[in-house]
Length: 380
Ligand SMILES: *Cc1c(COP(=O)(O)O)cnc(C)c1O
Image (cartoon, rainbow, N blue to C red):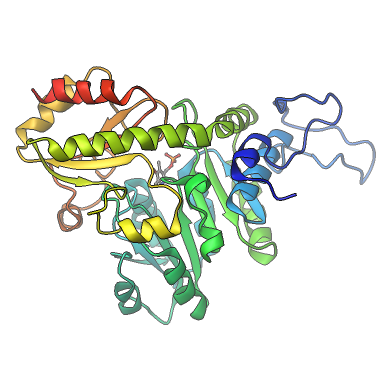
């Protein structure tokens, strides 16, 4: 039966522990597994290759994203690093220029030296992608909404163009998650997540996920890469992630409701210069986001008019934590230029609008009024 996403979040692939019938899927905290005899296996040999709790996560995320295979890693960065092992020297990848700083650092400082080439462009405009096309282009990597400027790229349009050229379309779906946006249904080949963020949802674990649209060569290759590198998600963290995902929908709806209230409040605030939230009708990508996703998420970036406000706000917030990361039940405030995006050169940040007056708010599930009062107090 094809269940609603709300049901899929709670039950995943419907598998359960056959021996005990445990409702909460058990944590198989074992490095290795006993073989019944020569050339016989229970299906599990060694936890770097497969572990039952991790397998449950992998099947669940594959079902949620509408893909065929899932892969769980120790962090989002590990997921991306493993994925990029599929490329060869000389391969060229087009990448959203507004993206997570760690991803940029991975490409520029680690993968570039193996001869993989990257072009960063504003993927919210398909003409930029067409212009950056090379003979050697093999894939396009997008974040939508992007981080931290919340630009929206058209997943269907990009996937169609990529398919016509035999490129892979890779989407970092961390900000909206399959609860609001399912890139594979829109034509993408690979979806990735920092499970640390919304999927985990409680700021208590690190995790990374990949989902592949089709079974076959690519999935097999990734399985080999995953077990060979070994940056896999541990059994306990797999369990925390499963537990977090059960309430994803409830959390995201509440977080989005709060984000709308805060975005509207910021709009009326005289200290604020610009707000970047795709839920606002005036946001450049609002229409496309509405078409390709069922929600706008709860990441709100904004710039203040006076740079002196930044220090005041970051020091003055009491309920809101000035901290890196996002997506959890607690509201966090980030200063992208100094924190998440510090590895990106200043010229690129200037061009994007990531300046010393920009803050990024990850709205949690607290009372929106309390979050607003905290901001109000800090600005005063
Ligand atoms: C945090 C993040 C990552 C990296 O994930 P980690 O779990 O921190 O390694 C990648 N992409 C996006 C959009 C992120 O927010």
